[in-house]
Image 1 (cartoon, rainbow, N blue to C red):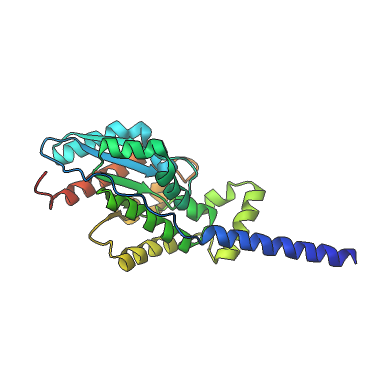
Image 2: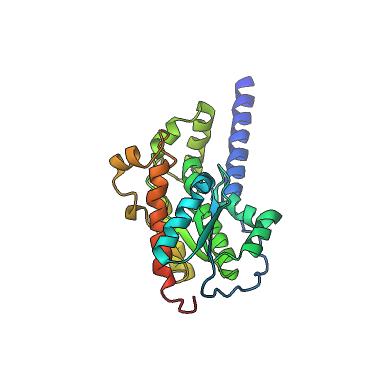
Length: 264
């Protein structure tokens, strides 16, 4: 009898946990806010760039001045960069933050950004969320930026050491990740699945000419050497050299994107 009750209790716990995780991974994004006043860029204006997202955006605070200089050297125009990242956020949490945080929205209105670099999805792969969760969140983020006349620059999931990141976790987190992998049909190394999901979103929603994507192979294609050269010891976050390489790609992307805007 006791064994039966224990088995039933365990089954109930598993089913409830399954439902909770499914509900967490599949959701309807909050409604977008009204667009801000359209800002027309004029010759001589400082080009303003925002960074939003996870720890990659947060840790960029120490490099804001450097990329501003890199962009300045590339486009021969003053540039300023401001990072608004928060460590550990998934793509959904990033989207909800940019909708709900009053101070962030105030900055977005006052600073009149032309570009926004988006680092989202790394924690989705780390926490083994579903690709559907990622796509819906990215759709919300992209739409938010576009209706506010801000050009999104999306970071494709980089080639970080996802296996090492998993094994560096405590046993209870590993167990949670394993269960999430089972529920979401997500493999341990799911980076390419999320890259494919981003491409699907871009094609499905017609974003191709509206956003820029920094492909991981454009700057992070030599896995073994890049792990030593561009990443910290954890294999998950960039070191100073890594940010310099990534920032050069961001500057190049902005330079290429500026060409059609003859009014600047």
